[in-house]
Amino acid sequence: MKFKMAAFCTAAVTFTFLSACGSSTVTENTVELKKDGSIVEYTVEEFSASYYDADELASFVDAEIESYLAENDGEIKVSRNEVEDENAYLTLKYDSADTYADFNGTECFAGSIVQAQTAGYDFDQEFLDVNAEDGDESDDGSVSVEEVVIQAVVPGSILIEDDNLQVLIVQSGSNVIVPGKIQYVSADIDVEIQGTDTAVIQTDADGGSSEELIYILYK
Image 1 (cartoon, rainbow, N blue to C red):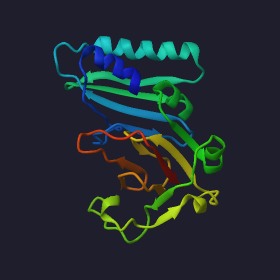
Image 2: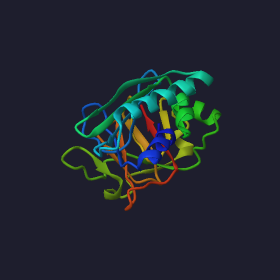
Image 3: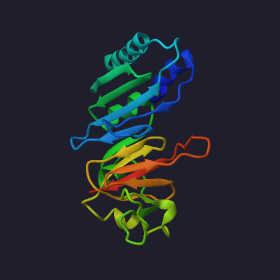
């Protein structure tokens, strides 16, 4: 609920966004793609000042969703919207990447490479093979792109021949979780792979990030 939530935040005071994925300790915005193609967005934001109204926030979220669904197809459900321990927790479930993208005014695509090309997404770029064996792994199994010798750079022209690859395309600023093992990511982004299914998008020194498209290819 990025740009719509921003309207509420601006009216009150600009909040510092964090996010939580289920019970994990993720501390940045996170979007999770489910096997059925639905999208779950987890967000938690600081909510400690006395002039923040929890009921007003809940009403705002519900009104925005109701207004959107009155004029658009799709399904959006609020699975969590509460304030606890001076944090506001919001978890939204979207029936598809299209609904998520339209509601938030952002880019989001999930499907096969062929479907992505049909939708107009360009694979004429380089990708990093995140499973290359020349990278250094940390104790938690994560591999930082900055710590490898660009692992293995693969042109998109080769990857589009692999019918088994699926792709999630999002705009940077949100970490992503996919329903499979990540194989390749866009080569021009700063990303860390955690486990096998999570891409942690690195921000710049000011905590911001660009609006470039990020391609996450997985099986």
